[in-house]
Length: 232
Image 1 (cartoon, rainbow, N blue to C red):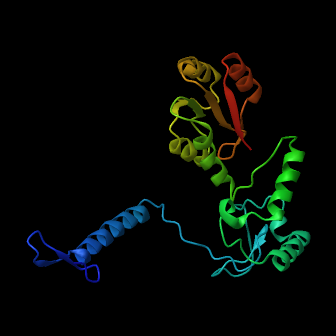
Image 2 (cartoon, one colour; image 1 turned 135 degrees about the vertical axis):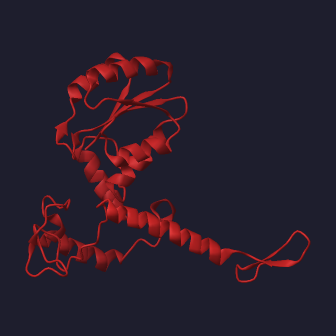
Image 3 (cartoon, rainbow, N blue to C red; image 1 turned 90 degrees about the vertical axis):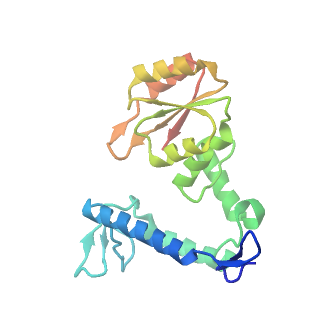
């Protein structure tokens, strides 16, 4: 019988000590060694605690005076915009703090549907779906669209969210050279045996600043009967 996650019954019914503590000690030793290796390689990242609103100028704990912030995604300054803050306060008053459930069960509210309708109209599409983050959107897309009968062709420098999403799906996977249209065409020819072919690319590759040649990609996919997914 189990008792406090320590004891277990042996094959002959005689209680024996479960080596839980030694296993935890072993795990701790492994993790400490890995963390030390990260430190020695110069890859250790410590948190910088922001003591102010997000913006181009922020106050960080342990640093006197303000510093410039070049690493946030707050390109338009909307996170601290007075109208956005006021809208957030109004939403808190009307809908409360949090959904209390995932959208699929009982977490869909009128604000979601209204925003999705506006986004769909803006992009001239039938509908739109809100996701908690861009990463989640890419992580969930490919598994929903593709099966083992299909193929996905991915630029080798696509964002990590695209790569993770492709890994989660069961489609056949092809990787073509970064912005290499000749290689993409060769992979499209190789993938013709599959039911659907989907070419996945960033529109703007944020780490390198490259822009995908969408006209050429669409020309190739049209020639070979494939679909195009662009992460913007």
